[in-house]
Length: 328
Image: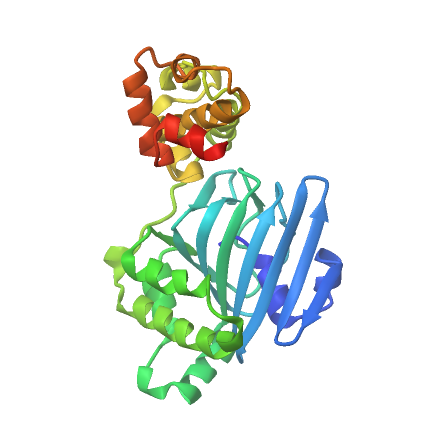
């Protein structure tokens, strides 16, 4: 869903690498693609698992890495988000998001552009892409894993039949498959990738249309206003502003902002406010040792110290006193 166009370039290992990622490093079985802009840096580490099958680790700390490119072959692209969020702009101006724990399956058709733009709202994205060139990958599966009877066309038609992309919210099976991919020992990486790709495809082959969930789409105005609200909370963690006031400030309907915010941040606005408030309080406990815990509680908007301590522990895992002592 995210790297779409760039992933085809990575798959073909073509001259496009030099256009989009001038800082290219080849290292044994993998290809490292790096990009630097005035908003940050991005890195893709690509592994050829088998003919037609590639796994890429994506680590982005930038506003965007989008470049328009039309696929020359048919691809099935599977993306898992570990951290952060990725925003894709669709034709017509609406946007959708891939958030933490989400799995997306996208149908990249030959000669067609799937997305017209993309951004990284939080300037942070970590995830894995499994890219399958339909014809080549199917030949590999037919030859090397005949007993699995995996049909990529059937998977694509079932999961992406009425559109080009679907979203599967975090499930135990998904978390299990990808959690191991994020920490695999490099000594067994390539054969292990093959095992996990097979496991993933077998899992997807069991799904039917009832699992299909189209990514939520939001207007550009809702997306922009919600991201401004997100930034406001980051910059003003002790603000006592309400959600309705926040929506009014950035000219977005409250219900739309709530839905969009969850897609961007992975938490509700209320939960996110609480997390940022406690993180700021934790920083204050360490940076301002002359302040009593009661004074820090007041700064965080709590008149009752015991309620502040309970809220702090629910987020930080320890009481304010224990956190301060541990940090000294």
